[in-house]
Length: 193
Image 1 (cartoon, rainbow, N blue to C red):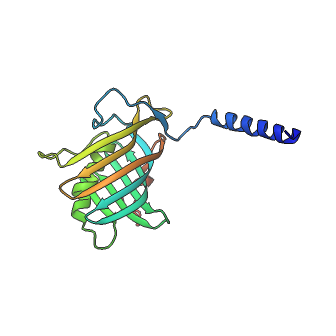
Image 2: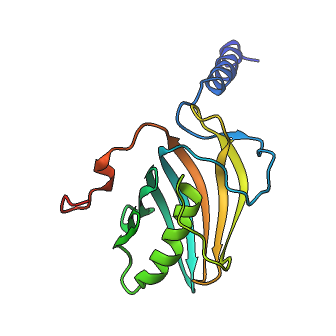
Image 3: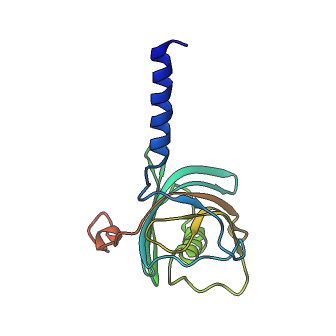
């Protein structure tokens, strides 16, 4: 073997080993699922931000997006963008108010408020909206991960299926940030909250 090639291979192996040991501060890390049912919703922090990759299929239409979620208690804001950066959805929930600030043309707001927004409240907030008498939504958590600074595993991959409104969301957690969320996250474009 050529001497410089051998040292190059050793340098590459050394670099790969050292980069594998660098701690990740804000991204999810794989973790075994906690000892509970796969559709049981875990406890989440009072305040946090998440970034998700989402695939939403609703009555023949399909949307691939990156979703940003800011939660503080029962208040939350979710904004989703297409993979090319166009805004697809913007939801603001400050109970009892639920507002669809932006959605694709022709998509009715009632299923978004009564379906998607209720489902997001139930899954991602510490003060979920009351569940209806009939179970219309199933949540299947496929995997969990650990996040630095939070003692419990959080859902990493989940499927949300709402039978009443006819949609399925495949959600994959990309990042979770536990820093406090302030009022700026809940302001709309005109400065009102």
